[in-house]
Length: 159
Ligand code: RTP
Ligand code: MG
Image 1: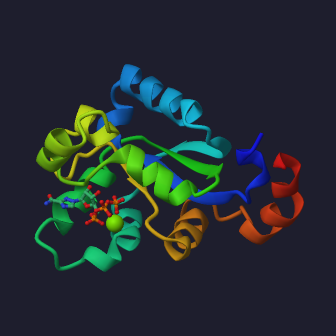
Image 2 (image 1 turned 180 degrees about the vertical axis):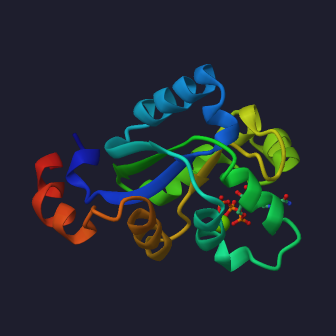
């Protein structure tokens, strides 16, 4: 009950094409979300066009991995979630573990990327890294979802 009295924070979590391709992995990740006290506020499956991928990762354009990242993220089905919890952004990123697969395996073997990450690009999941990026990314994936309205109308229902 203690955690329910804290104000909920929203984050955007994405299961990337490498993980969605394997039904058991998708199921395991969905289970992990539920076991870690997140409320699933919205969930949808989608496929990106290359231009969606380029727009979402515009901040990385010019980096050596940009092309392969953009190709990968538009290569198959993804699942996007709006998750709510106290400190949701930090908790989800902790569960994911480090971006780089070898770092993840050696320093956080029980993290999602430590267990399931294939390469530094095909690393199973995405999570917003700040309140500002959560706001932007939720709007990107769920254009009809209004964070302010949800906070006002529905967040109190969790208290
Ligand atoms: P994310 O944004 O996905 O939560 O991951 P992050 O902050 O941990 O990593 P970031 O540096 O923002 O990179 C975004 C995504 O680009 C891919 N990547 N590939 N060396 C590589 O091949 C490489 N480096 C990064 C990953 O898919 C990473 O999640
Ligand atoms: Mg990032």
